[in-house]
Image (cartoon, rainbow, N blue to C red; front, side, top):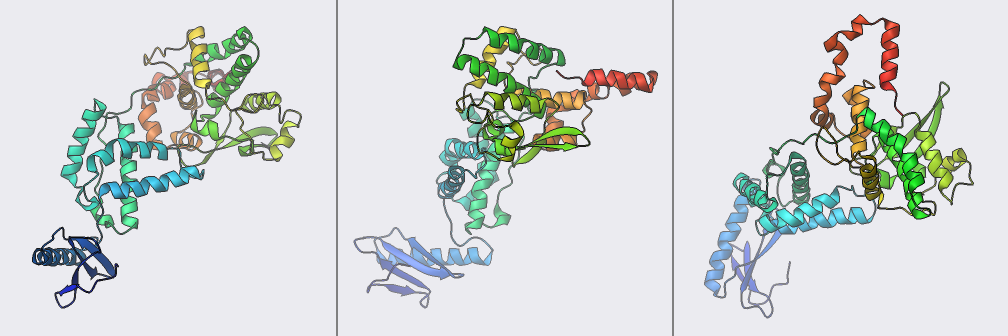
Length: 416
C-alpha cells in the first residue's frame, strides 16, 4: 500500500482512507477487504465527490466478499497477457506444448481485441454470444469444430490464470460450447495408391539431380514410410524426434521399435510396423555424424540428434514441398474420395485407415498409438465402419473355411 500523506481523510470509522498521490490532482482511496488491500482512483478532484465514490466502492467490495466474488478485479486483456506470458515462457524453455502457439495466436487475434477492456468477471453468456457472431464475421464463415476447440482451450487458459490469481472464483467461469461444423473427411491413400506411391519413389529419386536435391528425395522416401507405418504427426512429432527417443527391443524372437513422440499433445509411445527399423537404419547410414557407429550401439548412446535430417545433420523444412512435387509427378496429388490435395499429414490418416480396416485394430488401441482421443478417432473415421464390418455384413466369414479366411486376411493385411 502507498504511504499516506498528512492530508489523508478517514471515512466509515477508519475503514476507508482518501488521499492524494504526490503531483496528482485526483483523490485516491484505499481500504482492506478480507486481508486484501484495495486501492482505487476516485477520478474526482473535488474532495466531497471523491468521498462519495470511495464509500460506494467500499460497500461494493464488501458486497463482493460477502457473496463469494473476487475482491480484486482485472480486465480481460490484463489476465490474457499474463496467460500468454506464461505459455511463452514454457515454449522458450522447450517445455511448452506446440499448441500453445495456436492459443497465443487466437488470444491476440480474437479474444483480446473483443474482450480487452471488459473485466474478467463481466464476461457472461450474452457477451460470449456477441463474440461468437463477431468472430464469424472476422473469419468470414462459421469456424469449424477443431478451430473452436483451440479457441475454447485458449480461453480456458485465461480463466485458469484468473482463478489461480484470485481474480475470479471457479464457479463464475463461463461455460464454453462447441457447435462448430464437424470436421470434413480427410484425404488419405487407398492401399492401391499407397503401393503405387512406394513403387514410384525409388525411380523418382533416381531422376533427381545430385547433391542436396537427391539427399532430400532419399530422406523423403524414409520419412513417408515411417509416418505411414507409425501414425506419427508430420511437423510436430516428427520434428521433435531424436535418436534418444528410439528404442529397439526383442520379444519372442521378434524385433520391435518403440518411438517416444511429443508435440501437439502430451507425450506418448508408438510401436512401428514391420519395416520401420529398416527405414531408420537407412537414415542412420546416410547421416555423416553417426553412420560409422553400429546402428544398435548408436541407439544405446541415446544421442540428442534429430532423426529426420540430411547427411550433414541439418533439418530441412521443405519436405512438404518436395512431397507435393513428387505426388504431382506421380499423378497422386488429388484424393479421389475427398477432392482435396493429399499432404504429408495424409499419411497419418492412411495409417489410421489401414489399422482400422486392414488390421482390425480397435479404436482404444489406435487412440493410444496415435496419441489422440477415442472421440477423435470415432469422429474422423466413422465412415469406415461398413468396411470394418464387411465380413459380417456379407457373411464371408462363415462362407470360407478357417484356413481360407486366414489366408484372405493375410493378403488384405499386406502392406508394402
